[in-house]
Length: 280
Image (tube, rainbow, N blue to C red):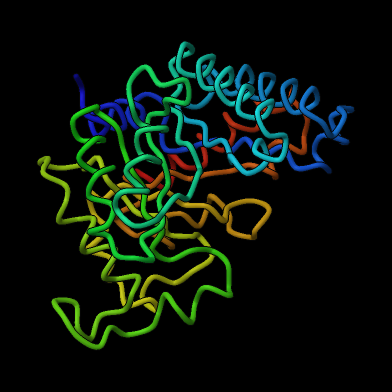
């Protein structure tokens, strides 16, 4: 079974690092002429997957917007995931799960188990209780050829105080919380070159302010929200991520989705071209 790292490397080679988020906000449903209910979300999600296929190599559904509709929302996720993966898209489930080990193991089983109705290629996770508490999902991901992205330096300003706080004791004493996550996740990657496990680093933050050295990010998959509607531009990717731009997943959602399904392919191709210039 190929590792997530090898799948991600192939995607980078073929399509580059642009990833389309699928976030069915109520205002986007309205803009698309769809109802703010499960029926509208299903139409939105399936059209978005169709528009992404062949134009980018990855999608990132924001699970919260589907969970609003309970069982019907999860059924839409199952259908959307299956459609996306059959179209050759890598699916990163933006679920941001985190808990003590026994509970978080179950989250990993839901989203990363091959054959699960919610099977994705990777998931996002939160390590507030410590990266070590995610050992179960990491083990499952490694055996199943899946990926995990742990939140490190996020694009919301309110997180800065916690994520830049300095650790008082232990192996990461003196490091920031964000930097300690980067180092713990890096240590879990056993591949040579690009790893299967990565971190979330928002495009609206300066990594130096978070105590992260740019050299620590090379070969570490970076899931990068914050482009488009949150203010960062794809033309800034190298400025923001340095040499790690080649292993950065540039996620765009509202700025592309608001153009409507018919315009999405052209928008994505344009962004791919812009990012290609940054990676060279």
